[in-house]
Image (tube, rainbow, N blue to C red):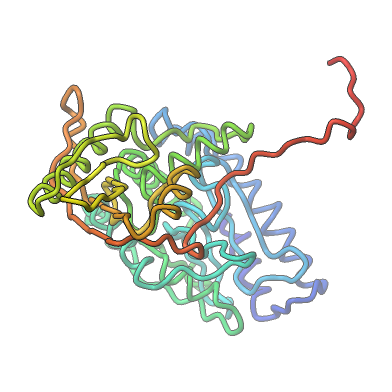
Length: 372
């Protein structure tokens, strides 16, 4: 691996987006040779993480069509980081000037929005980095060689600065002081082992900076599964009991608020497309309640809820109870706390709605029907 890293760095000063002979050779080294070396070590690396993480993969990229200024080769969980724009992974990042390669514990630093990849906001990446560093502080303390800052010297790409902001910790390897094979392998084993801890913590966390709220993530997972998409080991973030506990806590907080403001309340969530029927004299409110362990920036709405609140506006109210604490060790789970936010009257802004699934009626006259 030492020779491969040095050879890839040698091509970096000759970078161009065109597929020149030099870039073609660099691509073969990244996508084939370096990836093959990691593949050979994958069984050993897989043994460093918990059995639940049984889908470690290797991927190398130097650009499809246009060659990228910062090529990379990574080790990742296929379900937790299906692409380099999602989740956490361990990655070799090659500086644009060819002076250094980093073995970095990094993350997806862009997000797909409106048909293009957009950089994640710096404050969001920093919050995620802080969360990971806090979680792994004990491991990092015993490894003084790790660097919190990396410099990829990218000249014409935002991806370089994105990787720099997304770095949790990295081993820097200057081209004129590349370590021995034994050291390279030991560093790789260390970062993959802490990557496994990060995956476990992320799987168990109720809310993560920069990630969809648990209920949003679970809705997306349910939709993808219903559509036949394969997710490997990716499961639901919350159990049915946990969702029920959070829902009941949010409804209680909402009812207490409404009663304090002299409304009579009735919980109708089991039978109606809204949660609370609130009345005060001649006034009637259709109250939608959403509870979450996250910051409440996004919630899931059903088609029925959207239609009802559009029809009944302005006699509508949205109550969000965010930051709910959940005791998962109790049986059943117990929810407590939360921050109340009330929107009244609530007018649904169509621009804030994002479809996450479609139901498609297949024309009967299309296609050829044959017995399977």
